[in-house]
Length: 340
Ligand code: ATP
Ligand code: FE
Image (cartoon, rainbow, N blue to C red):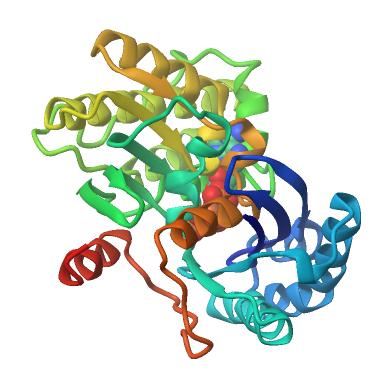
């Protein structure tokens, strides 16, 4: 089946055409960073309006690139949350309109499920269950992914998300927005041992995360004037990686999943990828991480999640709501409740 995926939950507008046998026929992402940069972060109202302007052209573009007509698409998968609800509504309503016009089913996709299933789009050898470190702009969780729609959350952050920590560190270092890639680049020129920074919750028995204390420590390091910005960036990145490795090791020891997977925007970071690959080897698990473009927000992962939901027969009515909040494991409750 051919699925049109639509993504509009934050500040990336995206459309993609993917097939249920893992072909990416076409995909396009337009970031809105230039429009939000003057404000130092994403402005919800600007994001929603920008999605209205950008998305229709992206749909036309992917159809043209794949040389198929909208009527040849088998289903339309749109992000229905969680995220900035104005933007979510834009993409979801676009999906509803296309579904109504074509008579093809609508699939309302949880953005986090998009991230969670993304590794399987490019790694056909990855089987369920797997332990997932989901590290993105709004989330930092460890989940057992047991199957499509079947997620068990083992841990989450008690304060900031990992990507948020990168973005705040970038702001403090004057690197602007978006922060993750800029911090990674600057870190490459620094000494990761130059600045003593905390590793919050490392050593604790439950695999939760915390990044707020690290954020304050970075701020103090910047204000002290004692350190080179590159050394602060490198030391910050090393601290985040240490937290990831320690917390994920605890979760792996609580799970018999044969594979470790990392996904979400922070999984685009090379140090994160390397450290978790090493951890997986040490703990005797297989390892999978999507290519960088599939870690940050995109519509191919939404189309791919849609393809798997379609295969399971899970399609949605045109009354499905856009949701600002939508935990992944709540969906698992629904599935179990339905006796699936
Ligand atoms: P969520 O998926 O939780 O709703 P989001 O969609 O805004 O949030 P993603 O697009 O998945 O988040 O990830 C973006 C985050 O990833 C940003 O915080 C960004 O700074 C971070 N990020 C992107 N690339 C890198 C990188 N190379 N190193 C570290 N962080 C990165
Ligand atoms: Fe995301």
